[in-house]
Length: 68
Image (cartoon, rainbow, N blue to C red; front, side, top):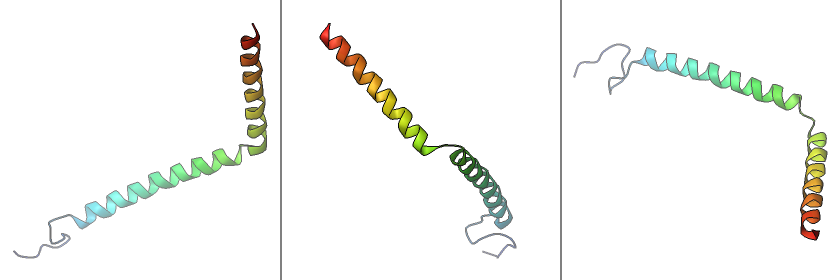
């Protein structure tokens, strides 16, 4: 089999693979940026406090139903 320029031994287009890799890198970068931005706007302590309050209200409501 004669060697073809810009093709691997299995016949894969080198240029096509490079283009796909570049696109995948751009998409991953955008997702990572969004995740970082979202995390920066989240106050973890506040979320924990809200979760505890919600849990307490839920437990109080189920306790009231058991007494009825």
